[in-house]
Image (cartoon, rainbow, N blue to C red):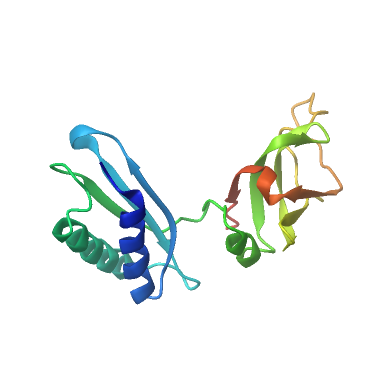
Length: 169
């Protein structure tokens, strides 16, 4: 059976040696379709070389230590992408000022889906500025055009089900 914590320790150690952060780690599938997906990042962005170094070193260590039992698996190392997932407090702090799309566990003013500028993150709460951003899932959306809501919403991080950056190109 896979010891995901042992794998995480190996991945974290290798990433730290290269000045990288492990954003996500997941092991999926079964049989010959098993995949270990590692997502890494650093403030100035990830390069192909970063992915290659982590892939080679982690792959070698996992094989030598037999940390992934069974015959085969695919190892994938990548950057989080422009629409990266946000989950850790440090990520919300880092991306303050960015456009964010999120879903909450509980409704706020009848909505669970929001898109707005991450204005602030402090004390486990994030403030989204919804001013001027059409809210596609707003209650009053009866016509073809989404309403523009002029307001801010404060959400506890614990209430965030899913959050992603919205690319601004």
